[in-house]
Amino acid sequence: MPEADHERWLTYRELGELLGCTANAARMHAHRRQWPHRAPNRVGDRARVLVPESLDVQSRASHMPSLSVAQMSGEPNGAEPAHEQAAQAVQAFNTAVEALSAQLAIANRRIDELLAALADARTAAMISGSEAAALRAQVALLTDRRPWWRRWFR
Image (cartoon, rainbow, N blue to C red; front, side, top):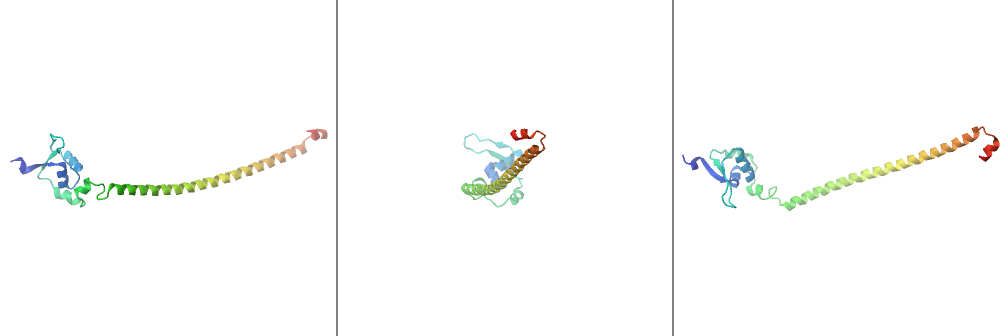
């Protein structure tokens, strides 16, 4: 039997259209099934792969969403231009920055409150410490067993 009855040579793009996927996915599909391929002899020509006629196209294409090959290969995310994707990414980034800025402001406010409380506690400890030192000095003077004239001239 001739080769054309059972098999045909297709480019990866044509195979992708037949399978309902991108050219790169079609290339990987052919590679996994170890179908023979032909490298082009001239620069700019396309590589071709030998596809068997018994390829079950309907079962594979029925699972794919209804997207055109131009949408899958030419433009990112279907019909959305790249600048719209970039604008959405920038907007999402700005939203995240605003949320983090709000959380940072809350954290800074809490740190300021804690620092003020710490300063108040240190001041209270210093006052009580200095008052205690003064009281100790008075007790030492009163309990000192030195003669009166030594206490007077310290």
